[in-house]
Image (cartoon, rainbow, N blue to C red; front, side, top):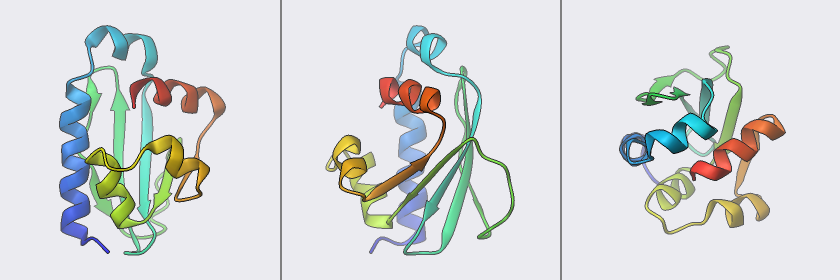
Length: 115
C-alpha cells in the first residue's frame, strides 16, 4: 500500500505529464471537467480540474465531501502510483477491475486520447 504522500506525489507527476500534451491535442480532446480521484484503500479523495490550459493541482478533500465531479476514478493507492509511473496500463487496469471510472462515454473517449 502506498501512502497519502506517495499518492499526492503521483498526482503531482500526472499534472507535470499532462503539461507535456501538445496544445493542439488539448484543444481537440479536452473540455473542462472536475475530477475526483478516490483512493479506496486509504479512504482519501483528491479533487482536481482538467481544462484546455492544463490539469490543475489536486487537493485532498474529506471523504464524501459532496463536491461535484463529472469524472470520478476509484482505485487503490499502489495502482495509482503504478499507472502514473507507467508500470500499469490504464486499459488493463480498467478491464481487470482495478480502476473504476464513472464518467460519460464522451468523457471516457476524450480522456483515452490523452492517456
